[in-house]
Image 1 (cartoon, rainbow, N blue to C red):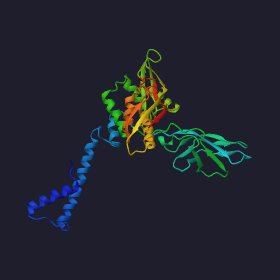
Image 2 (cartoon, one colour):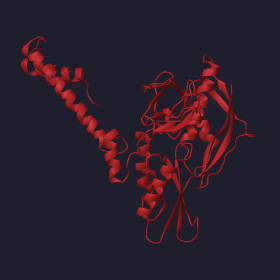
Image 3 (cartoon, helix red, strand yellow):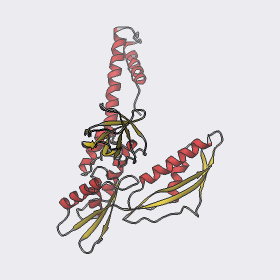
Image 4 (cartoon, rainbow, N blue to C red):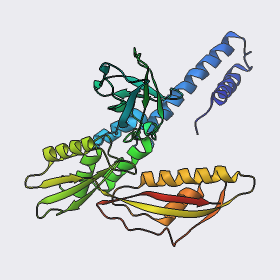
Length: 352
């Protein structure tokens, strides 16, 4: 175990006492030098300890983990921006055409999330509203917001114009975490890519930002064909991402192989569970946390993976305040995975 600063300083004082026959005063020249040197030694040991952790993919973090991944031709996925439509409407009908310029910035009520229009749009004279394609200012799942959430226009307009999102914004994903990237690196050792096997196609698909998981099925459209099913977290990817995956597959495919990139079939699972709450915990708070844990579990299910009650139960069990749980098996049961299927969360009932 690495020494802390005080342990290093005390060891240096003991050595000095052994050879000089006395302990230097803390305010003396020697005492100050010992403190300075102990600090430098502690800093050096800390740096060495950090570098030792970065030597192996099982303990490396951040940019160092990215370097280990790059050696396996694996790259961290970046975040993707949510997209949707903003509705602009005048306070009163206008007598002339009004341009909503590209780059118009709008926010939710508290100003924490900003959304930007993709292109110029014209609110024609007498029109009650116009819908404009828009995207989140930054990537991330927090920008996946429900309808009727965007309320304010940041960009100055000469007319009184209101904004709202009449549809939900979706498709925003977070950047790949260290643990998720580490799992992909580990899989590359367990199931090495040969340029022709399932791992090869899956790794290619998951190198595209926005693809959280992918599965592969041979002979989907006859001899010499391969089906690749790409998905985001708990949902399908956008058509643009799907096209990007297809283009990459066409570029990297082996000779004589035709690859079809498709979205998986979404299979909603109805979940009904009862939890026993430990004494001293707020029942409603525990129920809320259980719901979030179940949602997180479904967001971690990959294309082709099975839905297992034991895995969902594992997520529930680790919620603080849960003493026990039981699923209503007349509603919720294990479901076997298929290469073209992604299990998603359907109706959710949590009783306490």
